[in-house]
Image (cartoon, rainbow, N blue to C red; front, side):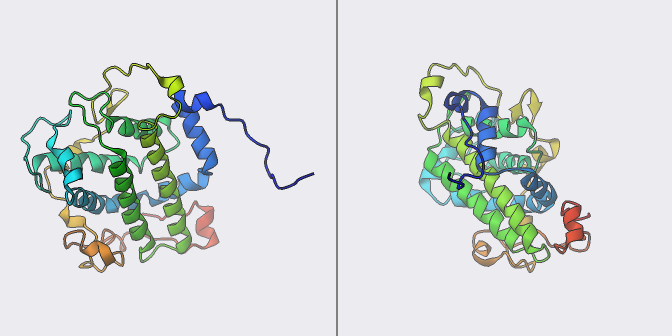
Length: 287
């Protein structure tokens, strides 16, 4: 008898993957082995990820504005934005500052509780909104740009976390692995709105008018702090080498001169050294 199979084969109902978001998420969690270790890594690493958000936002929008095929999306008015718009947007254009606000809120959401279904519902809605469904001003972003954008976000976060001067390698790896799984699940929740797989189960569904951007289940995703911050420049926390950040490298030319996102935190954080005692406490750094 073969012993190569360590666990019994699981049955996955194909229809449920296309008709039940919860079933789809359960399957992805199981396949990617997304579990308690990943949740703890995201929880303990959230302070470091949030410190990187301004830099990530700047880098992503600088990248999107480098190409006419991606920049032209910002000449179409979004549902939630009623302010003035520049015909040829740059980083200080009103519509770009508005979009930066939503990207900040999205990245903060990635630092919230992935044990709640609302976390994954929000990621699914992000995918849906980019196909134009439920928008007053429909805007369909072709998937090639979505995938490339997610890759940039993952690349920046990975480099910065792995370059952190005080985190133990095991914690760095745990945070990077957990983030990677979340980003790839997000990638799937984009593609489910673009590909035709399973359409025999979903054909004819009327999605009607969906909640406006930034809202989920009648609750506002954006905080007052996010909205206030949309009028300010993000350039004070970019990934550059002026602050002695080891994560400079190729990012120094991609972002404006600034300080390392982790500068100033070292005096306030007692970071673990990866020893067993810290592991027993979940590896969380005491703030």
